[in-house]
Length: 101
Image (tube, rainbow, N blue to C red):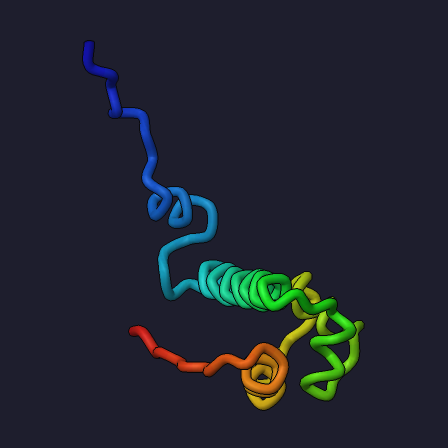
């Protein structure tokens, strides 16, 4: 027996309905906040993989435990230079950036 999918909504359609089409202010705010959230989660996961506490990571990259916590919890904007120090000095990684249009 086939299940009907006519009432399913794609995630993209859901975002369009909830936040508006790409390019609208509300949607762009959502997209920016989501990227910041993903960045915080990525830093937290990498830190844990390395077996570091927030305090240890902060010491390695010259910032505070509070700042690392705020980044991981999406409560703080982060400067590119600080992000580079966290990734390189703190986590031993390399940062690459991409721009999509």
